Amino acid sequence: MNNHREQIIERFKQVKALGFVRSTRRNNTGIGKTFEDYIGVVENNINEPDLFGYEIKSHREDATSYITLFTKSPNFPPRANAYLKNRFGTPYENNPALKKLHTSIFASRNNTYNNTYSFKLINDKQHNSIKIGIYDVSTKQLIDDSVGYTYECLNKILKKKLKDLFYVSAERRFENGSEYFSFNKAEIYSNPTIEKFLSLIDRGLIMYDIRIGSYQTGLKYGKPHDHGSGFRILESNLKLLYEEHIEIE
Image: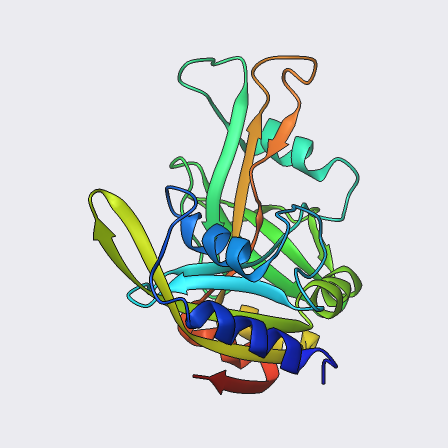
């Protein structure tokens, strides 16, 4: 158990006691940024837990969407994003010289991309890796499975980034065009396992998003720009990833 559990629970209860607070940021990221501002988290994009060793995630009570577990570019082969974008991407409408590749992938079914390719996650147990399988949409033949993640890479992220997760729910309302949140419930999830992660992938309960674009200006012009490729799960299935789950009112 995280030794700082009582500290983060007490900090949450202090924020809860404030009732409705005004969102500190517009758009979909407002809820997370607002809670982090009030609980005292310095915003960062590094691959580390947020506060007291907990990764913090927030959602609206009426939300039934996918949440991001973690984002990371494939760890094999080298320059995997550039390879995927250049070989399988589609041109930007406003700049046909550059390509992008945005698609959502499951292990339980094939998708269709640009009426040309079909993507599917492959759990390669022989080589201990999750691969991005790319098929010909017409013939169903596998074209490429050279890009992916090793089990070791995925397990390290689970144990480092998501070992202890503090998941906050909020009621929301609008006043004079501004959004307000009341952070009224929280859940703590602890000890995710690679075995559960792989099982959820096999069952089609974890989705992988490829979100690769190209820099269109500046010194990095033409190089791949990862907009958050990563693994996502429905909020209702989050508990299936963890050994321990407790609710805080």
